[in-house]
Length: 499
Ligand SMILES: Cc1ncc(COP(=O)(O)O)c(C=O)c1O
Image: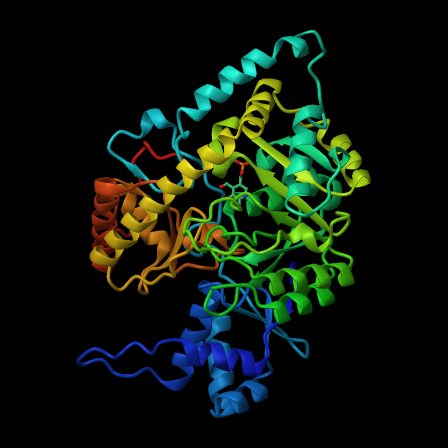
């Protein structure tokens, strides 16, 4: 067993199994035997990510008691799961969930389609919006005016331009979290920030606890850094963080790092409340785990009445347990490639050294542009435009999906850029495959899971609105039809797709 393992108790597993909606047997179909229904239920929980891969399952006797079935039923279900590759057992040690080799599509990151290849394809792969003009143009013009004094320097600022570090520090201070410029490093996007953090703390073989599901590209970055991912399932309704589970994992696995998106989580859109944040930080501190709080989506509260809880670093202002990562990519424009880290000054010094061998620093002009936006008040206006676009797109997409695919289920998030959709029992990987044939590119659930979980999901971003959102839903419904009728299996993807 390569992974660190979590455990699922008998009562917890029984609750999860009982919460699965029983699908009515169609006319002429016979109910499966009890062991088969149990095996299918557990398999579905693994594929949907509600039970993590490599989780230890309860002993047969305990599960039989919790479910009020015979031990023979549980033994036969476990045997069937073993035969199908969903369970691994070691005599005397127990049984762990697994995903068979070659299961649907391997989980990978997300690569945006080059804009010039888009043509008639609706790209739902990338959760990023076009620049909120005229603010991009104004910011670049403002930056050009401020460039001359920098042109006389070497131009290398591995911790970031002093002016932008001070600006970002002041913004945290204004939110009631006192911050010095020495606590800030400017990075090349949030990706650059998390890459540096993983290099500093998450060496080869280190454990990193991650939400399950989580943002695909960060999971991939961590895998490639050689980390061992420890998935922590989101609460059963996928609406938030199960703090008992988090405390248990942090205590038992004592991972070096944990990665959390508490503000409009990607992909579920969930928002952690203040109590969950406080308890997460306390649990990390007690376990000696460094908590990466990814605030990339923080400013994208889309509904007027969202009451934003205190930032995670508000529970650890010194920044020794919580390392905050921010970004201009979602609030403003991903093309800026500006991100930042807030942490204790000594952590920042080590991070600056850690990133020196990757990119030496972040482009000066873009830093000046973000600094211009933040000092001119343009940032707030641009973010307001951005929120408006995302809100309209969300509402259009939600309405279109409800109309075209009434059996798809989702919770409408109050912010962020993504809708996490349960696809009515259809394989997300097959849908992605079929989507490529009907001109809609959609990332399947397993990309957001560890080891192939979340087969029954897709992620839809708020990047299209109006008639395009309607057409996207029509094409998704066509893809669903192909999958349902078996017409998509084995279809070859057209060459225009890169992912
Ligand atoms: C949660 C989260 N973190 C980080 C990133 C990457 O951000 P950046 O473009 O700043 O590298 C994204 C982009 O989708 C994201 O959703």
